[in-house]
Length: 141
Image 1 (cartoon, rainbow, N blue to C red):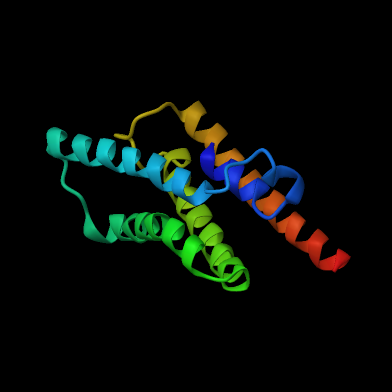
Image 2 (tube, helix red, strand yellow; image 1 turned 180 degrees about the vertical axis):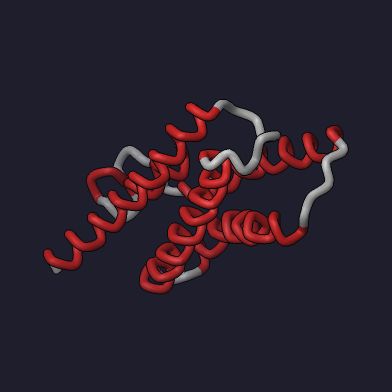
C-alpha cells in the first residue's frame, strides 16, 4: 500500500499537500519492519535461502534503505532520475514476487491464490497507471 501511494502521488503538487514530505523514509521504515519479520521467519523455520533467488530482493532492500538519504542529499533533478530507476526496479521486484505465486511455482509461501492474484493484478495496474501518467506528462510538456 505504501509503495502504491508513493508511486502514484510522487511529484503531484495536489497530492504533496497531504502526503508526507518524507515518503521514502516511511517506506524504508515499513520495509525495515518487513525485513525483520522475513528474516525471523527464515531463521526460525529453518528454511534455506537460495542466494540467486534472493539477490534481486536484497538489491531492492538496499535501494529502499538508501532512498531517504539520497532524497535529502541530491538536487531535485538528480533525485528525479534516481526515482525513475527506483520505482521501476521496485515495481519489477513486486511483479517478480507475485508472478511465480500466481503461476503456482511457489507452493510453500503464505497467502491464498486469490490474495496473490489480486496483488499481482494490482501491481500490473500500478505499472500501467504510472506509464500512462508518464506519457500524459510528456505530451503536456
